[in-house]
Length: 94
Image (cartoon, rainbow, N blue to C red; front, side):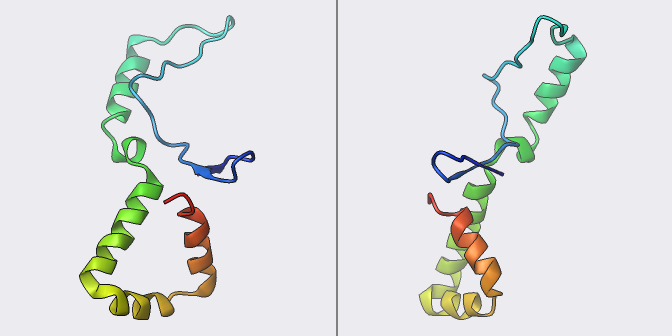
């Protein structure tokens, strides 16, 4: 994750889109067929297709629904306060 200095929000830098074409400068060669195959393979990897923020948010929400509000709060009280603070900052936009 990288933080956007203007908005203060986080962006998942591992996400890839099939619409994104790599920027090629004059001194670089265009992507080879091997490069294109690597990208197609990477696009099938959840690391590059699933937002980490969205994933963490959905898992926490599912746990909250499973345990109920009181059970989830009890569970979160056992988590280190620094971790809770970091989670809150990380999930700020959700």
